Image 1 (cartoon, rainbow, N blue to C red):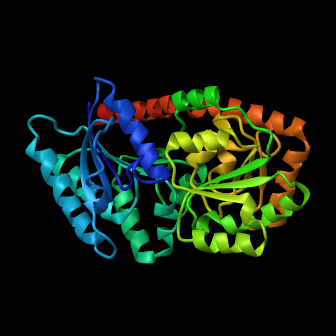
Image 2: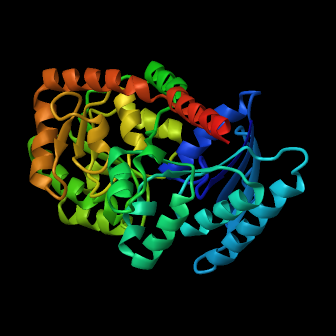
Image 3: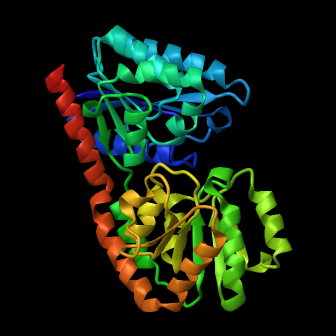
Length: 379
């Protein structure tokens, strides 16, 4: 089976759940002789010299020009995605086209490719590509038209599926929830080499942007630091808010106990998560964070905001603690409860590890394989 896949992010060279999801799906499919994958990935033009090796199949890189010239890059994207596969049409006609975003600059060329090649296409919706763009009426109308042309739309959370059904009017029989996953081999490797230390460490993983609301975490940690002198806050990720976050830490006199790591490799991120006492998520909106699933698979106690796809995997009081967004007091209370009650922390951690087993990338890829096979039968 020949699969043509597109992604607007490229793991491991860019941070983002979309890129990770597409990478692992592509990698597993490319390792199976039953599949031939042609992978189109967009990335900043400054990265074009960094691709020394690649372990996820045949890849065509589409280099994005700096803002505000991205549209030129996407025009090239249209040409490449239309021309390259059809130049090789006699050798490898795509049986399925699969795009990992509902952004118009990708949806449109995918639809054209589908028309020209009479090829079914699948769109995977990850969150922001729908949640934010639906607020723009004209964009939403165009999205709706193009999404209706898809054979199937997969959603990483039930919330996204409900938005597409309720607000976009898409048929339920073409909407399928396929969540994000974790690398079980990497989790096993990290578990074998990392032992929790004695210090109380709280870890945050994510982009330092408004949607992740890291300021709430810092204010909650200030409350924690007063009663737990050994507590540390590890912040993994980067973004436009980093400087103002560092300033807030200084104003609250906790700068010496908050550590900013920036962007790290996936293995290093997992190692720091495995060595922490609490994984904290403070998002205002979410699809389904991969770092959350990884933390659960690593057996870490979870405190997360009750938003988006988070309650799909975290049950309050069962395998983690859920709190409302923008509530530093509630967040601090939940984290302090885990620090003060090791029995509860251990119970939630074990339950999190058990419930994460269904989310390995092996299982997630199997769901996509079944979907591809269904499409072939229907074609």
